[in-house]
Image 1 (cartoon, rainbow, N blue to C red):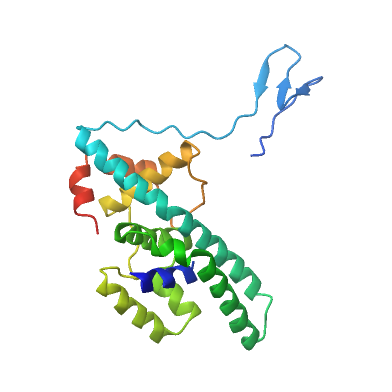
Image 2 (image 1 turned 60 degrees about the vertical axis):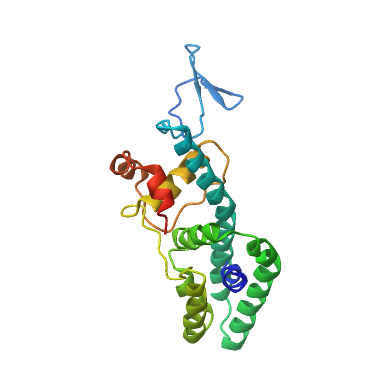
Length: 226
């Protein structure tokens, strides 16, 4: 388990108003001549309230909710670091210096996250692998292959399989119920301000998927999670 988590650590509104004559802006609002007030509001997503069929189902949901919350920050940070790394690499022409810079970033990620990642459970590790695909658009296997050698990517994937963790796992909430459950937890956490929202690199229509999965057996889905 330690080996796979070390590898993961390495990869790891302005609103415009149409104003009429003599409008006045007061404390982020517009005071119209007729005394009506139009406020600037943050975008709000209203989600359908979850209805649990039993206390057992509720316990299962919030157990998995905690696992997703433990894994998400690492995926978010890894995506931010990858964007930063790619941006920096475009300014480096020397192949030797590019390799040196990548190695430096890997060392930074390892020092920052290795100890924390080693404490994650297998379930959290599986969620993290899926979320890394959601946030970067690449599987962990592809990330390792791109920034290391293809042979090492193969080797690490083989090692991960020993612990039942495949680095090639992808995130598909449109076809896998457990992935949609992860997406549902993220969207609800975003709307409540519990998690900092980061736009995924994958195209996901949450509301369309909500209709598809509205009758899922949550306990069975979590029990049979991949």
